[in-house]
Length: 305
Image (cartoon, rainbow, N blue to C red; front, side):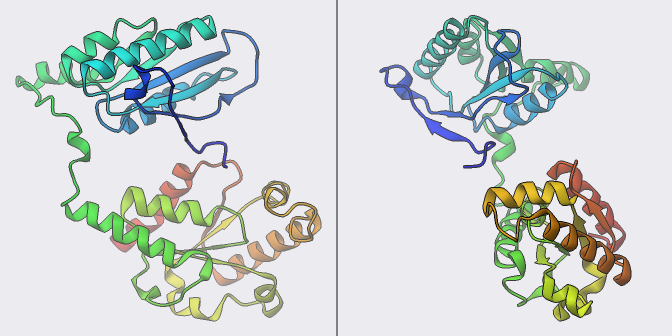
């Protein structure tokens, strides 16, 4: 399992059985000090994704700290609120330091219960919604899950369609309906094409296909033939040979595919081909998926997408 993948777990106690915990392994620098090892809870009466996204963005500003991330979604009853407090207090006792809580709880009664926990409580709604109420001169709806009530919207449907398209056109497995692609990512295997394609689909509704550049292409000194009629939609990704060898070694250790010599050859040939063919490209080595996707979107804007 990828280290960033959430693992589902539940507590065996009767109270905690009412809530579902979504957690992952600590992120950040390894340390045994209580200052460096903190548990962070993301709590919501909805999915908790908003609280988690915001919280993790803030926490990345603190280098040298290690965080264990725990998301507690759908805390939408008094019983679940009480169970949440018990869960947080138990973690505080176990860690020897109070956890952090990023909350998007809307219900004021549930919010007050969870605030009793032994934690540093960061209420995102009170931080932003209340000042906006004062600015606009009106009260907010305080509706649970308002942001996610988009299942019947055209944008939501476009994202679902784009996700299906990305899956069907991953790694060059299909050239059917490539004319519908908004962008076609090219690059050596394991340079980040698939996660970028899916991110563009899920977050922006962009139909992204991706094609690997392989040794056969390098021998012919040409892109895959099917791509030439869509050349204006190509965007290249590359990566340093050392990082590529590291990533490939996790998949196929001690193979020629993962050898540093082969990785150097493939990266050199792929970059040479993209320069020769006039394909815009960037290195993914030190960039996040969000940064890569933003650069791709800048490439798409002149096309009116």
